[in-house]
Image 1 (cartoon, one colour):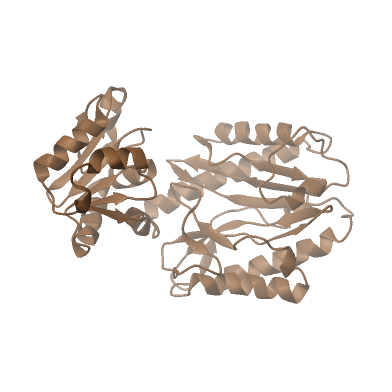
Image 2 (image 1 turned 90 degrees about the horizontal axis):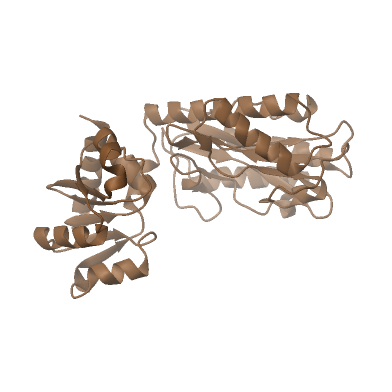
Length: 357
């Protein structure tokens, strides 16, 4: 059975358990997951009788080549076509992606039949958590392109250059290494700016004694990679060497905790316990990790509030960080596949790379 048909079949089974006769999918990565369509605009209707992708003439040929498991309707009036289909099928209950459908479009579609519409947070995201082998291979290829790009950029030297120059070179090099694009805008944060977890690269020049946090990822076959390294000078300033060692130990503790059946909160707790023993927990300001796939941030979440449990085939990041205001920061991140009995890294750079460049 084609992948699209198999995934749509799993979704139909899930919807039937919720007594939903028709589902409207508008999140483009969900549509790609279900059908293979990689365009930027469309809506997918899924029912027990089949699925229909509604898109416009820009994607007529592309949809014929890509879409699997669904019929395609080409129109310049997408929402009118969706309404026509709803009226034709006359479902008792219509599910929709409440986190992704705009209020304006919801009001338009649900007028005079609001009682039929059922808000579903994101049922497709639940299906996407466990990756198939082809999805994992795509992420591995993305990771190879990203890692190779970073090594190429570092080999040309980065101290004395601006953060923006290094980030731009890294994104260009990822494409030269076979990536379709960066999976997100690269973070290059030097010196005291390393204490900003989501720092935007600036024209600041990377000094000879600056620590540098580089968070980067590539996209191949639609799938993302996500990795972070921290580059230290030979003699790190003001305790960053100790912070680096604390973060490395915490990351190792998190990776060791990964195996099927483990609650995600437990992995997060292992990281926090390690940082607490080192005296750095108060400087850890975000969650331990997240799922990766067609989106760079997906379920499951490795956080104190997560209700998810690890299952074989999931791919998550483990990315503890320590952020010292006015001093700098350290973050180390790898993607980890949940295998049969343990976690297996699918990013390749040793996190001691900072000692090598």
